[in-house]
Length: 252
Image 1 (cartoon, rainbow, N blue to C red):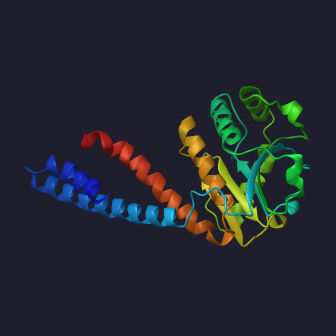
Image 2 (cartoon, rainbow, N blue to C red):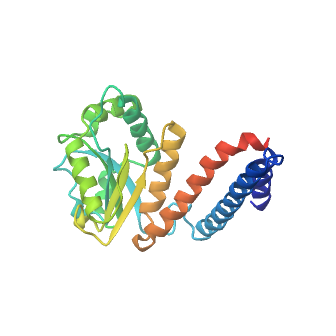
Image 3 (cartoon, one colour):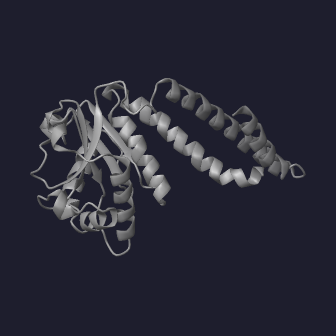
């Protein structure tokens, strides 16, 4: 990580060595990059040591997902209850992105089953739809299910969830979707002590969507007391990935 920082500083400074102001700007940028990259390295190390990449294999909590109407799956029955919350209904302009996020949702989290209903320690994430629906009605194949789930998306419930998260102190602003969960589920949309939150507003590609969903799965099965710290580490990792994607070609 230190070598990468040094290389970035060199790349930033090298093109400005003949101009006084340019060299100064390059040095400032280089110093910023060094600080950011080193901080990212330290946080990522802590993240790995904390076992965030262990998908709840130590024990208690498991993550599940479901397509559900407003009267299905009472939040009070779950230790963690969350929603994939877009701030608006799908349109012709953003419909394909809804489907992409939905496909990542299906691929990244296992569906809830009848046997799961007997478990106390369950983190359920809901893709809200406008009416009660069965698995058979939504469909089992990826494209079919996500087409139906997009057509039926419940924007009213989603906006209520976003408003509740903002009242609880989150800064939920952007195109979304936002992954928002409460613990315990009985405090859903109330001022709960613990709220998990991931912003997917900058997600544009399927690989990015799947990675954010995986981060969400890791987050909701961890101890609620650590949610804020763990997601902060995840955000630094995301920044590092995006930053390296930008400057990487300059280093080659």
